Length: 191
Image (cartoon, rainbow, N blue to C red; front, side, top):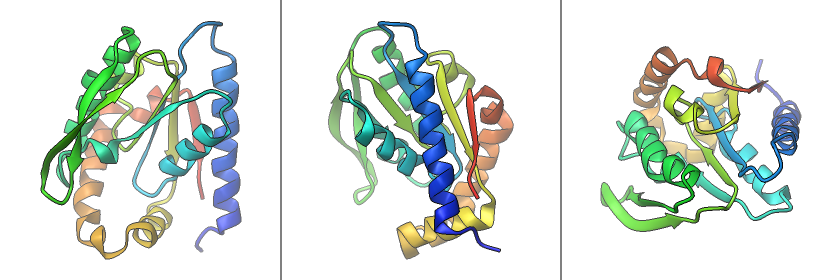
């Protein structure tokens, strides 16, 4: 039986509350950096946007959809996020990266993510052991495949449908190789 929108909204709101609590518990003066991972359609983007909207502080928000180098680029996008964004930000330097141009199938404009600004980085594959070592707030959203697929295809329509299985196989590999659920400090089940 499909989950109701209310059940999903409640679970995603709960995720946001847990993240807020984790940020509040960080030592004074720490730069909040939040990683939100989960398979396609789990609610990562929704949680990230809601977190940014209600934050009393300015927060940078980057979705890995902006970095993945095409439909076969889950692992490469996650690695770029770590190397070009997380590591520099943690070192007090701005992150410099190129947004993926999905229309032209090549790197596009350069983006600079400022240092010293709290950061939310969301996307399938973002939570790896190397990335986990760089931030204390790490979220894994778990959701049944049929519900995620329905939400993802409702969101992205026919553009995504031919790539669903191909992308899911990369997510499977990420889960096997990196065990993101085990790296998370916050686990949320989304119906």
